[in-house]
Image (cartoon, rainbow, N blue to C red):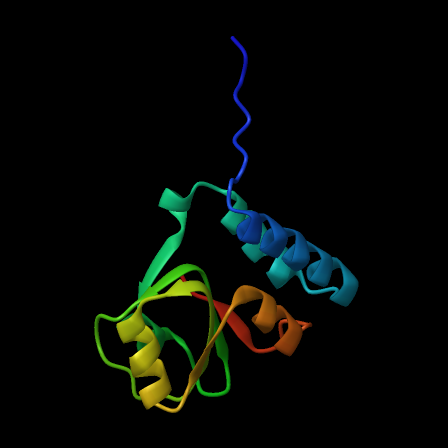
Length: 122
């Protein structure tokens, strides 16, 4: 029985995973390699995190990294930077309204190359 090798068909995702792996190696930041390996897996296993969970688990001065999608259920009052593959419109609006910002994975790896004060959520 031959095993089937799954390959990602989204070229942006493939490039992002390669970029995260390179950033992790170049900067000695295992967080970006960990996120890359999570994004390489099936999308049905990716994290889906509500903003209420971000509010509960992210401390002041930390960045939240979500290997998946941020959803808009709940409220958020802390200003935080959230790095994610995708975010719903309502989640983005709530994070920005609280004084925070939402970054893509590549932008997050550039802004925080060593992964300092980044917390993986989900």
